[in-house]
Amino acid sequence: MAAAAALLGLTATAAALPASVAQAEPAVSAPGTVIADWARLTGEVVDPEGKSNSSETSIWHAVVSAGMYNAVVGIEGRYEPYRWNERGPRSASSVAAAATAAHDVLLHHFPKAKPRLESAYAASLAEVPDGAAEEAGVEFGRRAAAHMVTLRKDDGFGLQVPFTASPSVGVWRPTPPAQQPFTSSWLGRLRPMLIERPDRFRPAAPPSLTSARYAADLHEVKAVGGKTSTVRTPEQTETARFFTTVDLQGALADRAERHGLDLVDTARLFAAVNTVQVDAAIAAWDAKLHYGSWRPVTAIREAADDGNPLTEADPAWEPFLVTPSHPDYLSGHTTTAGALVRTLMTLSDHPSLDLRIASAMLKKTRHYQVPGHYTSDVEGARMWGGIHTRTANEAGTMTGERVAAWALARNFRPLTA
Image 1 (tube, rainbow, N blue to C red):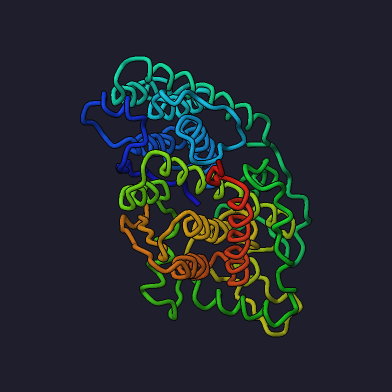
Image 2: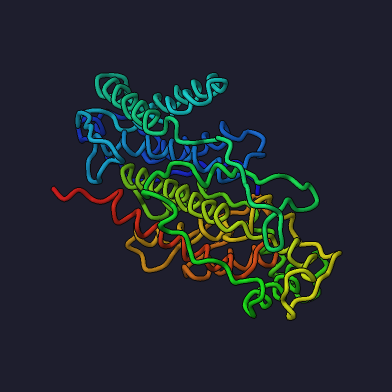
C-alpha cells in the first residue's frame, strides 16, 4: 500500500458567507476552494515522498478536514459540529476560519513544514478582505484547531501493538519478498473518530481451513491472482493496478465542484468521508489483529499442510501485486471502499454514485455511476492482484458499509432548529 499521490485542488461553487462580507469581497476563487486546497496540501505535508501507508495518511486528512468543518459550521450553522459546542460570530469569515484551522493543526503536528504552511496560509488569507471579519475568522479557526489537537491527544497513533499469534498453519506471518513484520498494527487499536469501538463491527470468522468455501477462495485467487496467470483478463489486470492507490481527496474536490457545493457542504463532504474512512480502516485492522489469517501467497505455498483435501500446494506461486505486510481477513481497501460508497450516497441527493476518481499509478480516471460497480471493482482488484481472497474482500465491503451507516446516523447531521 502506498500513500495517496499529489491531490487535486479543484474549485467548488456558491459562497456561504454573510451578505455583508460577500459584498465586500473582490472577484476571487469560490469559497469551497479553501477546503480542497488544504486537503491537497495535507497530503503533500504528511507524505511528501509518497512512501507512507495510505491508512496513516488518511488519519491526518480526517483530523484536518474535521477541524475545518468545525470552523465553518461553527460560523455558518446548518450542520452539527463534530464533537464541539462552540459557535463563532456570524460576521466572521468562514474561509479565514477554515484556513486557520487547517494551518494550525498541521503546524502543530508537522512543525518542520512551517515555511510551506505559512506560504499557503498567506495565500488563503489573501482571498479574504482585511478587516474585522477576517480577524474574527482567524480567531475562531484557532479555537477549532486547538479543539481538534486536544481531541486526538494520546489516541494511540504509532504505538507499539504486537501481533502475538504464533506462526502456525492458517496464521499470518511475514510474506515475500520483503518479509516485513505486521505494518501499522497500532491502527487496529487507534481511538476511533466516530464509532464507539471497532469490535462491534467485527465480522464473523473467515471460513475454516478445512471448509469447501476456503478451498474455493484459494482456488480462485490462485488462478486469477498469480503473477503469470493466464486466466486474468487485461481489463482485470488494469483494475488491479488502478486501485493500488487512488486520489480520494481529488475525487472529493471534483465532486464538490461538479455538484455545485458551497463552502459548508464542501466542508461537510470532506469531513464526513475522511473521518468515516479512518474508522473503516480501524475496523479492518481490528479484524486483522483478531483473526490474523494468512495471506494467499502463504496459504497457496503451504496448502499441503492445511488439512483440506480440496487444496493443492504450489511452493513457487507468486501474486501479481506485492502482498502488503498484514493479514488477509479483512481487506482494508474494500472496507474503506464500502464506507466511501455508503457515505457518498448518504450525503447526496443524487440517485447515482457519480464518482470520478484517479489512479496515482496509472494516471487514469474512472467515472463510476453505480455504487455496486465501484465496490465490485475494488473487491476484484485485490483478488486479481493475488493479495486477498474473495471472502476477505466481500466481508470488508459489508463492514465498511456498516461503519458508515452507524457513524452518519449520529454525526454531521443537519441542525434541527
